[in-house]
Length: 167
Image (cartoon, rainbow, N blue to C red; front, side, top):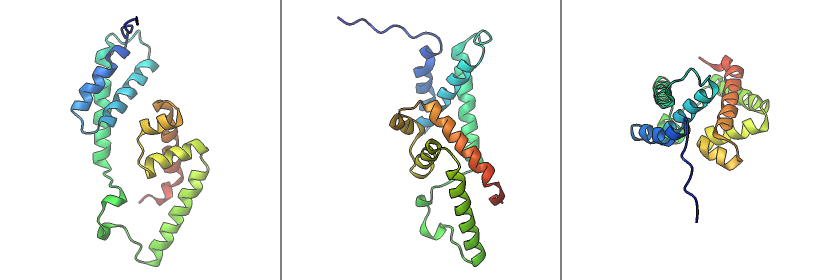
């Protein structure tokens, strides 16, 4: 005869409920999961004596995370190239554009090679192959948080190295 599972305590007791709450109001459940996981990570990284109500903290923190994600995507809308009509694809019309694209491609390759192999793999799977962070974490046997840290490290490095190409 098996014992019933022990009741969850602390922030974990609210975790699945929060994901369900935020997933309902958000078209992308992965964003909801990421926001709740980020909130839980912040909760675990703070002095828990200061936080009186873990559920309220997680709820507000996840809401703020989703708002930030929404603002970021609205400020910098992006479409994958394969979703654009062929006429809308950026094309190099002149020699200067071709040289610029070549320089940018070379700088991107060199910058990626400067990163550790795990960062290169995570960046490629996430940005080029469109894998989600949880998919990468499961495939590599890492935590979602670790994958996010590697992805953040990669993005910061590329942002710094490719700054000269920004308009």
